Image (cartoon, rainbow, N blue to C red; front, side, top):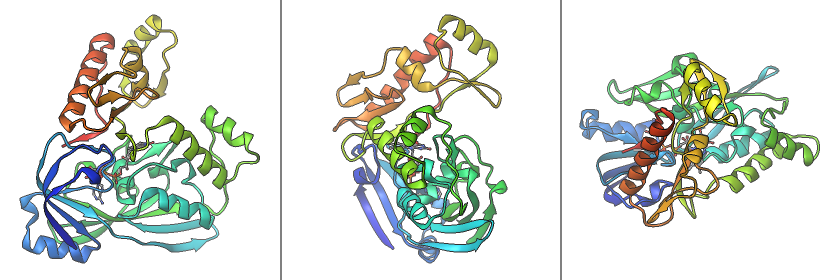
Length: 332
Ligand SMILES: Cc1cc2nc3c(=O)[nH]c(=O)nc-3n(C[C@H](O)[C@H](O)[C@H](O)COP(=O)(O)OP(=O)(O)OC[C@H]3O[C@@H](n4cnc5c(N)ncnc54)[C@H](O)[C@@H]3O)c2cc1C
């Protein structure tokens, strides 16, 4: 365990904004967490940060950040129905997906190249190209510092939803490992036309070709955090009632819309682009020119400047379409 006091946390987030944290604790195991909480009770407050790829610090952080650096991937069970693979929370998500594809453990290919850690994959219920982490998570191991105990939550107990889970409400639960149930037989899931066309152009789909194509498409479309700071999609795609969706469709016949639980889902990126924000830049804070849903830091934007820009975008979308955009990014 390593404890840093008054540390510059720029390199701990993909937005790359300058900020400091009062304390950042890098821990490798539950034993480390136990030792830490023995002298720093959880009532003092803490926040877990994985790869920091969904977090924007709008200023200095005056509390304690816990950062998992635990590593390890192991097969828990392997039978004719499938294989269960357990990964420590601190594993880099895309390394884990790469290991699964190489091992012939199929299912996660569509989730290739999403930044962040394995622990956060369960917290966020990450998703892309028609797949979500919840489709494959068997169980999640957590440490609860309030009771100093470990528990295993089944998939059902995790209350997964769109980019959410029980861990978003029960903030004291620290994910220590996630077990994924994967298949021995590869079945391509190519519901997205642009992905299907590119995968099929390369020959008969394999897990590796899907992974490589997803990686290539994402690299073309999304900023590389090593070059341009971002947190991926800044807002969630809103779900609105059918009446509002119909009124907007009458005004904008080209508006994409998808049936969803509780109404109609409209891509937030389309709304932002339609409102004229795509490619907008103020100082070093901007709306990514290739994807309006992504807000970026071109170099020296502060977290507050990015957060202010997000607020202006959301306000404008609300005024033009009557739709409230809710951030997917966690602003601290
Ligand atoms: C370029 C880019 C593209 C992206 N594309 C996608 C995409 O296609 N699909 C998608 O779903 N997301 C996407 N994201 C968002 C991001 O990659 C995911 O949300 C990812 O799961 C965040 O992982 P992280 O380790 O960085 O978590 P962080 O950003 O560090 O944390 C996210 C949340 O999880 C909590 N958390 C993290 N680890 C733990 C733990 N061990 N225990 C308890 N709580 C924890 C944090 O407290 C926080 O609430 C993208 C981001 C970027 C920068």
